Length: 225
Figure 1 (cartoon, rainbow, N blue to C red):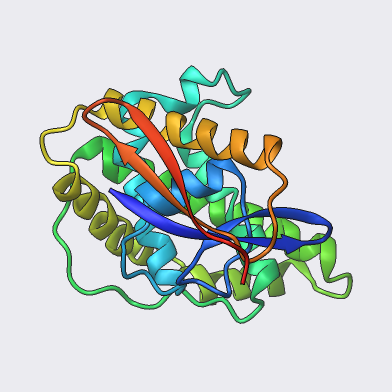
Figure 2 (cartoon, rainbow, N blue to C red):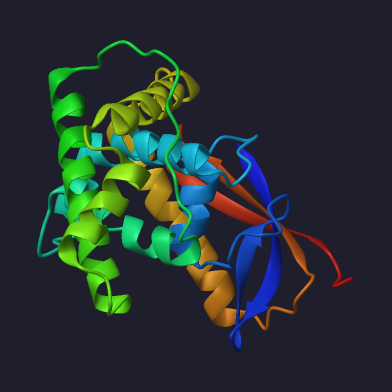
């Protein structure tokens, strides 16, 4: 599998962003691995596409214990995933997770993880609102969070189930540990490129992932345009 990225400068730092996503921020290794392996090829930057990518994280990383391997202070993937939502809200104060199509229940451990992710997303987003919007009362913050993320985990469950199952189909027959190590390989290759090359905005690169070998590669496609 592969994805084409373009080098882009943002705040005096040059990173990579998916070439078909001009509204995405440039990223380093972790972000590129996420865009390549956890987002769908036709994702359009919508919040539901992001939610499905979070669902894919469960199969690509959580299933094999990626956060435990990294020896993070908190090894619960739900804490890390839910903690991304304040940043998403900061980029879009009109954030609204829409109602998903009907879905069937996933494995118990997946359902439990998604529920915890929803709880952490609500808690951390309300907390960030109260920090940044000084005149906001706590009740107002929670009312806004209910509107955006749902007062029950149903919206999270629907979109993340879809993303989880999409990843399982996409990587059918690939062991979760191989996916995790491939994710790390992609991140390392992109970080090496960003760190050691003088990237020029406009340069295009194709980033490859080979889950069957737990490897990654990068090909330069063009001169800056």
